[in-house]
Image (tube, rainbow, N blue to C red):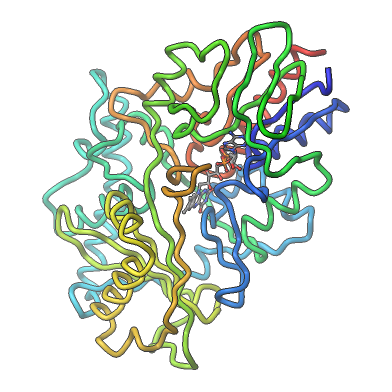
Length: 418
Ligand SMILES: Cc1cc2nc3c(=O)[nH]c(=O)nc-3n(C[C@H](O)[C@H](O)[C@H](O)COP(=O)(O)OP(=O)(O)OC[C@H]3O[C@@H](n4cnc5c(N)ncnc54)[C@H](O)[C@@H]3O)c2cc1C
């Protein structure tokens, strides 16, 4: 036996699992397919001259996010995104009036109680969209935020009960170094082998055996953190195959789509907008909403979010199409000269094409609200535990949820090899 615990994947869940094993004084090895740690959290520092997160950005639910105390322990400054945010809403090309903003606030306030009430009602699971208020002037905008933007997929295709269980509340903090860089710091000192894609995992005997171009690694137990998009496919050949309910759960928790676009200012023109100006606009049902934050934390760039099926389409068309779309949005809000305030050549993420992600984060298909607990159930008495954002019951889709899931899986797995 080469180690007590084998961890597959060095994203948030894998790093947390490996740290849990180390803290318990157990031997651990992490095999990571990419040439870097962090998984779907990745901070790019060159293009915009400052850290820009191409993946995970905010530490959501800050009050119960396990990464908040860890970041503080490392002395990493955490900016309070909600305190910094200056919200600016457009109706067409003009700014919303105070009366319109009051209506918008009321629509936002009505959304969550409607979702929670319907989710708690007896009867079969339905699409989250069916429980959302409809018909008001701002309901489609709120639904687009909650669907394509926050969930990275439309509410019409998402399980109401799973969506309600994972509604986020609490603070949203931004690590000064970037969230991907924070994970890099937390992985320091861990025995991670990069460029080690696991092709086959044997878990049928009294041990687990990982195989790939790196060779063979034997361990008493394994925590596997690959995204559900890969689990549902054939990225790793499990021997014996994963039980059918587990495969069904992975299939029922597909990853949504989103593109982050960063555009750097040419000069000093800040378009008359304050620092951390979070802009959106009123949309009609079915219309796309592309939120754009100008000058986040006072920095000289704008960041935009394209979410849902439109993001999938833009990824297929390529980064130039995504940049053109964001420039058109900027022009629609701030006038046709406004896009010229930004240099050509945006920084554009591409998570669907990424062979080790194939999407951004999970949502549950309608009727599959139990899928996360099925996925998180230890297999073979804990010899094989699946972990990752999709396994968390109420922080799914987040780095904090992935972290907590990795810790829990490692505790289960280590229990088997005591
Ligand atoms: C654009 C975008 C924005 C986001 N915004 C936020 C946000 O603001 N806040 C937030 O909390 N979350 C956000 N998220 C979600 C967050 O990034 C994820 O929930 C979290 O990082 C998932 O961690 P994980 O460990 O479950 O999976 P991953 O990070 O995907 O880690 C799995 C690891 O397994 C590796 N791997 C895959 N296949 C193999 C193999 N065969 N062998 C070995 N290794 C393998 C992968 O390379 C990867 O490193 C965002 C994600 C994206 C993409």
